[in-house]
Length: 417
Image (cartoon, rainbow, N blue to C red; front, top):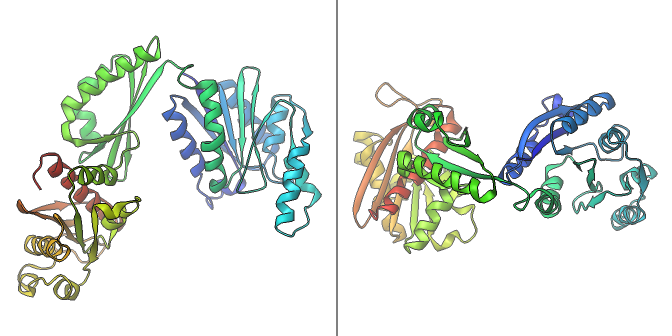
């Protein structure tokens, strides 16, 4: 398996002012290609520290990717230091000089001469176009290694990597060159320790695969990598392991690789030609946001009502205030009424409701913070589920919305709505 090492430069990353999201993005993209990230360094704008980090990367991996430090100022050192480590002198590229001058001309600004350093590259480097800034990137194969230098701003690096760098990596390190096979299994409704316990036999005997468990916003991602004699052999090993895992986890698995709960639910609704409406209280419209983040959601999502107050529940949804008074806004009867009423208002196939106590205040001994009721109404009847979550306000709201989607997913798979 090919290996990669990431170097993030910028003193702001060491001060806690800026989060290094670039390395997270790159690690995921590389992993999806079957390239293993073996390490990462975060260093400030210091010549010696950058030199040491890049040298470590060259000694550890086949691919070294740096982010940051490609600007025109004195402390933008990454490209110069990287070329120094590889002993590659740089020259001025006339085409890049012209691009820089044009960039400033379009903005009616004079270009400082210091910006010319951004047009300096080794003769045999491939220039990576930056359509969102002045700093182009660099892709350089040298001494059996690949050095890639990218700028720091995420809105610049992400399109550069996807549009230009990844195709180059696919050519040099892609399917025709690798022997490994990789898949991510997405799981909801189980904790990390539960998954590990349920898969104990598989963890102890992965049969040629490596496994990694990643907990993420109430979900578990199980990353599997197979290393066989060829890509086909690796895929065969992987398929066998996935079948073993599916036999244990069953419908706790909601998808694979890039699948998300909203996407999976949306596809099921489209396949079954069903529409959905939502009535939300404690989640404040988060369920609706998850569903409408995807284009074309009007085909299956009617819309939602954020009935946060008791008045909104009675006036907008038409819920009987006697139920609220007798049982409380966070209760099985109110969740049932919310699901029934939103479905009736929308004339949709399915009505989903969420009401709960997200905290940090508002809990009691009988209904502590984290108590949530989810209701689902359809032509097959009304069902309500009571759940208890722990965590801060944001975590409880996220888990509530995702739990509603996951329950709906299971019902759709069984044709029970």
